[in-house]
Length: 499
Image (tube, rainbow, N blue to C red; front, side, top):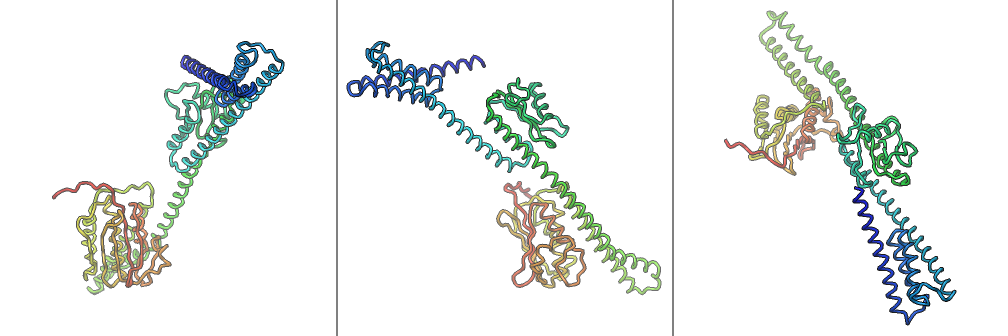
């Protein structure tokens, strides 16, 4: 590496020397061409121009050398007596010294201006990098993604290889296996001291690299290592600290967001459990009492009851037990879907088969054949839990049968990369002011006196949401309600089996 660096310096020196020679040759050539037309002072200005160009393109040491060489060459070729370094006239001597002074001043000012220009451009690039990193971190959703963004920012801002390591849950850093142990020790130390270590920091000034913690007291997320650091590069160290601060804030924000989400889920879970407990105590008490009462009467007074009364009590027991089964099933399904860890058992299914199975079951409660359906052939397959989708459609049809005395329409179609199942009835329209709450548990939108726990539509909405779909309610033209289930269609369909 040292040999390569020396070779680079040699090439740079040769290049700078060549530029100086070319500039002086050009000024000399112009001076000879205009020798009969301009004064000695004007010829001196040609060399001053060469010094100005060198000052704007070369390092200040080289530009100073160019200024001295320009005065020397001008004296040799143009100041009488020519082709010597002697000066016969005091005024010419003053001209040479003045030219040298002006050239040196111009060289200094030009070099200083170039340094300030380069610093301004560097600061502008660093400000743009900070803005870009802040924008990218705001859309990042995971710690590895944020680490990758931070690593890229450090590598582009400093000579590498930089190292960025995040803190594991056990408190240790997730360091690369090939990393030198001393580097890892420095990164752990900067985290313990919560301070930047290295050149120019007043802490471990003998190091040749910066060690920066990610975060401050109370929430440190990791550490960064930046090699080849210089003590006088205060702006570079501040930029590195700014990059690490942005990354630490993004990681801490993600941690807070995750903690808040967990707390919200826990609160919702507890509220849901309280609601379901209230449902069990309220909605199941009456039918249980009816079942127990009817069964007790049959057991104790069966000989005294007429066959008609016995049939009525048995019918009451079957009806109340069916209601209890429906409420219990809906409650259990709603509890499972409300649990974020519950995974659906999805598979590629045909909506025609699901609808057919639902209609076969619902027909037992529809002797008048009020349900009219329209399911076209060749519909695309959907990746769903067939039991849940069947329960959703069944709940919608049961509600329609319960609250609508007229014909009920069930239609299936595809539109806008979605499969849509609509259940339309001619019952009393649900008021639009109840639309926001109609899908909440224990919310009912009718006043017909029909018994219900208010869990059916809440379960339907939960099933649709769990599948990445939607369930919407709209008033039906001509009266009634229209419930529409929209499920996303996959861009690629599995091959269908040929019977």
